[in-house]
Image: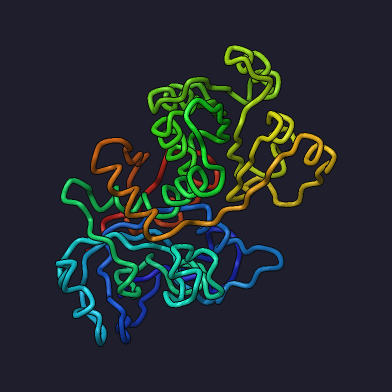
Amino acid sequence: MKAWRIEKHGGPEVLKLTEAPTPEPGPMQVRIRVQAIGVNHLDVWVRKGVPGHKFPLPMIPGCDVSGEIDSFGAGAEAALQKSDLKKGSPVIVNSALSCDRCEACLSGNQFLCAEFGILGETQDGGAAEYVIVPVSNLIPRPSSMTAAEAAALPVPYVTAWSMLTRKVNLRPGELILIHAGGSGVSVAAIQMAKTLGAVVITTVGSAEKAAKVKALGADHVINYRDSNFIQELKKITPQYHKKGVDVVVDHVGSDTLNDSLKALVRGGRLVTCGATSGAEVAINLKLIFFKNLSIHGSTMGSKADLMEVVDLIAQGKLKVVVDRELPFEKYPNALDLLENRQIFGKVVVTGLR
């Protein structure tokens, strides 16, 4: 099969299109014929490398996958009988990998499992014609959803839903600041926050993106290239009789985190799922304890979260935002577009046979 492979960390040149053996599913595994691959910042980090973290190279990247069931390992077909999934069925792959038997997994907190991993980060991912996944990681793809839309979902939409519902328990009427409104996670979070009844303030880097986040439901938009978001918040929050926001979603990191903490009201909550501008941040702890602030870390979510997101999309309460689709041969270009912030929502790689 054709597959993109990373032998060593570096720039776009380390991604090599190779001929690899077609993998065979083991017990309780399924082979998926890949139709679409959603590109995430995680794929960029796997390519570039992360200081202090070891990825199991060489590896096929690609964490978000949609496709069709191609073949079954021992016991997998029987395990799917009640779900009506069979060979050829269109599916969404849950990117989160866990043991499915520990207390964390059985309580719906797979992201706390000691064996937690992500497809394309801890084992070969979906940037190939075929990928092997556990049978428990399959979710039926609704007929109303394209393969490209389905591949845009798992990492960003599950992460956003888990952050807003599990971590900060966003409530109706609260003010939420969502940074980098054009990113995949934030495009999802804006819609979800509106669905949950919050007032949404978001930051973007262009007038074009400002118009797009407004169309998604954002109540207030701050162009961070034109003005300081803290100063702009001082003009916005008094309209709601507040001196700050209740919740901040910050996956930008070092460029914004300290000001994000300053933007919170007493008892405010900040949640982070990444650090695209840098992870090393010096924090003034007095700000945390005097204002009774909470900081939450979040990685992915549960299979139930993904199922709920798919249901919300099927009901029309959320929509998938795909900026563009690129052919399989352009997978490195897709990562470049993401890394250089040249997209709104998701870039998806399609065109596999």
